[in-house]
Image (tube, rainbow, N blue to C red; front, side, top):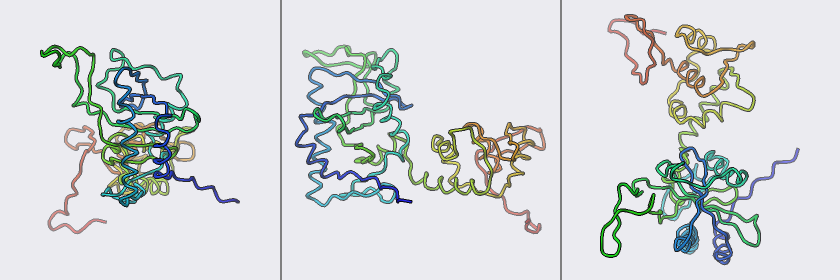
Length: 327
């Protein structure tokens, strides 16, 4: 069996040199995307067009070219910390939300509608994507992405403008300041995080937590038999649920056994089922939350009122004075 071909990582320095030489031969398209990572076409005109290359391209090229002469190195995001003279990169496939966003722009273009303040509301927008395409070779495509700071958004009902020596009502529907810092660059299967903190906020990529979560997922798969609908698995479901990723950080795996999970669910009157093979059925995120809460012993019934509770945080009490340790 032949060894799988390793994906070639982008040479960011070669990219900067080649792109700098062809910077005026690139078509630029802008897209807004919301908190659900749905893209919208962002038409631009007038003097704004002249700002696109400096804001979304030239500063990236200049930073890389300057870094080439001052010892800039590229390191894997998951293995390194942000520091001066280091540019962090990761694989696009590891960042699910970014991969989904680029997939929609590349493959479902006909379904992307033009942004409308009336229908889509700018306050729901999370960021801007600039797509660059070589005019002579449409296969050469890359993207830069910037986070929108909603605190710098102007709305007509709340803003004034100074024009012709007087203050008056802001005449546009929405106004905002485009961030002038370099944030994220996507080339092929590589993401370069020029601003790691904004990259994490932009795509919800908390890699350290995800590493721990991946370890816990592996332990869960060893300890428990689970059943999922076709096309779904534990890894994919967890990655889409920040709440679950956080919960897994300190979760003790295996203290509650497979049979005890189902008995516990029945005792707490929770809808968690098993199939004919005894595997616990996880149909969606709600079932996953219930399962994780059960193996973390997060449900309790009051002996006083008989009411059932989900415990949000727990503090283990010591043994009562004079009592021998249990277990």
